[in-house]
Length: 559
Image 1 (tube, rainbow, N blue to C red):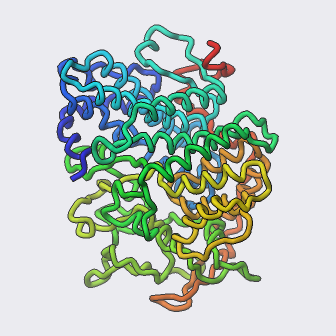
Image 2 (cartoon, rainbow, N blue to C red; image 1 turned 180 degrees about the vertical axis):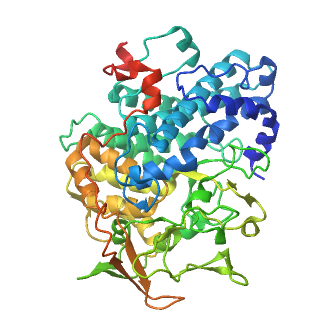
Image 3 (tube, rainbow, N blue to C red; image 1 turned 120 degrees about the horizontal axis):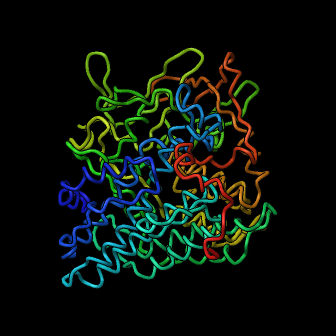
């Protein structure tokens, strides 16, 4: 049983209060003082660790529920929903789009509860709390807060940096801060966290020094383009820092790639050797908010779910399928199969089999064989994070209640960050270490080693197929947009996000597939991305409650 689950029982009585705070529409609201703040609560190491436990789950709930894939994959063009979430699919996210508001709210809940944890531990931690645990718990909160701000600044640009929600009661001048100063803040915060976190997790699932240094590698790679003003050139200093921290995690953390890509998503995969940081969900009958609900909306049918399974219209996009090696363009569409094991582990094609998942069929059950249906359109449904019925996971699943964790960072990303940092502002790189690191990820997927010099396009494509449906593709585009917005728009505007038909050459156990665009579905196949709609608009409800968010942004360090 994972550590977070045992801590969950310790704080169950406090969850209703926490839920009330999480439901507030006002992100500037002071966190309630009775949300795990009683001075008597912080008297032991266990109690302090319990106070930070919900930073790994509950506070991220609204983001993980639907916003993660809506923003991270639908807007990025790796997946789409044919009949729902169309604003995000068509790149028309507005101030009233539900996932826009839920993501903003969730990230500021993360910030507010992280601030509260830091304040309460500093104020109330008793003499029996070890200095090591106190320092580590505060570092955990700073780590989580910095990550939330990374999401905020990459989605909305200028956002207000808030370190103490309690001060907001008497401060009516809170405004947004410039992206450059937000990035400076979160990088500084993560460096401090890296210094204070242990090299090995104090308990399973807890962040470590290597989690923080991995985030620093990511942050510096993103930040390398922030001040370029679209010039196409990234900061070499920040590229060097990204390379430095990625290599440290690769060589010193003890983390290792899972042998088979598909094992990353087979129950029970939680806290495996490749995971550097994951949200720690638990199957929690009778409670709400500490469980993973995302599989309920992604599973293609109730036939493989637990009274949910509402993802029947969700699919890989035509563009996404074209990214896999072996799928070739023909005169009428696409055709082929791929050696890339990541396709089957991420999306379901007709005839593909998944013996780990039970499928209800007329008259009984069988091991899942993804159906071949329709005549001129069907869906390449989501597989990643789908673990099946309760019987497939030891009874630990129910409707909208799953216990499998959500990856926030894997070691594979460190290899690809190193490669991209080495490439830097060059057209290509033949650096031996970079090629070796790229191929560790590439060949793990069953593909032959790459020997040619690596380009940005090759690295971007590798990241796209490696992390599809992990809520990351959008942030790769934002990172590119910082220094080369024209290329980011070109990628988005070239994507086909419309209906198509996928036919296997035989069913089951196909050897290839043919992909044909649906003839009558000619509208809404493409989007138009530009400087006016690239970043998300601040949710309308927040603007009405905090009008200062409409004022020009200021440097956080020059207030």
